[in-house]
Image (cartoon, rainbow, N blue to C red; front, side, top):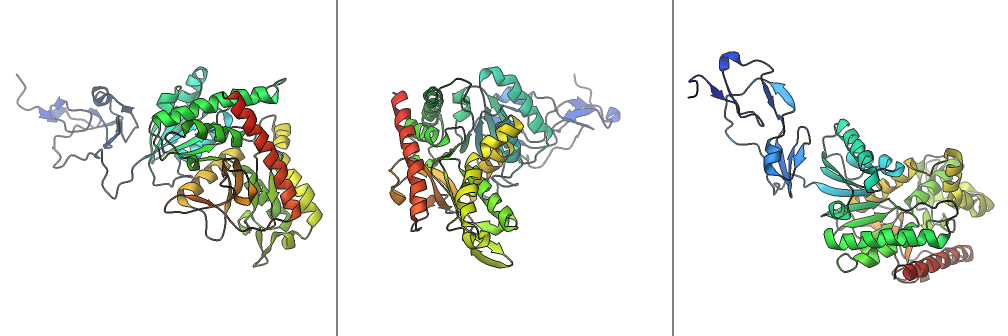
Length: 420
């Protein structure tokens, strides 16, 4: 028989009966935050404890101590599975190769709102190979320790099914690096296997609206293969490869040469492959110098530098960083990946464009379907990209574009051959 003076505690996660005369400031362990139900997940928003099993979720120990609460709430403060119009639905974002150095630099930028906005809730899925499962868990713990208000959940996984399920955006970073003594075709074959499998997983498990950025090299050809094997469900226009790092490098070089900040340079272009054959083009670029917007060629006032040292510096920047760091670019690559997806999500700035490697529609004579870097504008409402049309190409530009086109065409044919 219950003692008559016992009261029921209405703190979430408690539900115990208590003696009011013995109720102290630390008598109760409870969840101060509301629960959140999203797809199969039940999540305590205060501490990010989550489970797909309702009973297990209810049994999670609270995260805060305080006195028991005998007052029954008038209206349960529970966020519904279908959010109200003013509530934001979480974006489910995948990063592959998340235990690597680029992934480590990338996940914090996504989680803290640099890509999708500070107020957009994020479910961050991190995929890597099974031997790195414990490393992923360590990254998960660090992300929770950042105490980010918009990070709803972190899911470290080691299977494609768990990784690609219902994602909205994918950063495909993980790829086979070139090892000593490895032939180019061997490297290509290893990566074709990875991106063929991931394309199939996208088609099987992801939303048809998912947007995919391929970062792992050879990025253009990996994106082509991935799109090919996801084509039964996901349109090719939803796939792109990253040349934003090269784009950012080009901006930085022009800004430094002109003595201005990077925000004063716009409309640079990276044509072609993310490789040493890429063509960084500033023929149509603009620089704000002395309060006036002028052409980059005029601002730099050094054609030999633009057509030689500048191009070579951007093309070979990655190799120089490897030589200096003994590691590949990670911080700048992660920043570029975030820039790429941010502009895909929010649209490009008025009066400017970005460089993205996308499936060619035949523009500028590039073979249809070839994943090639073009100047791109993106509509903020539809998130659809378009290749900028009508840019005049002089003989110098045409020669450079032809070189990178040939390389990509050979890569594509080799990839198709090994994917059979």
